[in-house]
Amino acid sequence: MNMSDEYPESLQEAIEMAKNKLSKMLGAPQNTLAVISSEEITWPDTSLGMPEPGKSYAQMLVEGYRIVLSFGDKKYEFHIGNGMVKMD
Image (cartoon, rainbow, N blue to C red; front, side):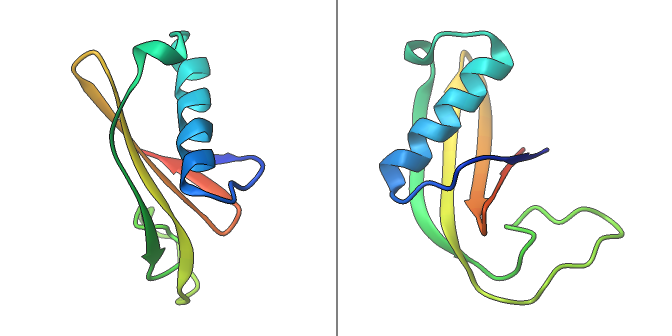
């Protein structure tokens, strides 16, 4: 799932962006979401590590973030970079 929004300028902003998006998507308060992991990362291409079948991507290094949140027993992974937010 692609989601465009304002681009975060720090890891903390990326975490808050991911929590806000997931909270809205699930209709759950942000304080019920747990941060499992968060990191700055350099993606090898513009797929941000989540390529879609049949699509081609620019082969360039993309600075960004990987955020994993949980709600209950389900995990949600966000890949952020190049002005894009992808969720798995």
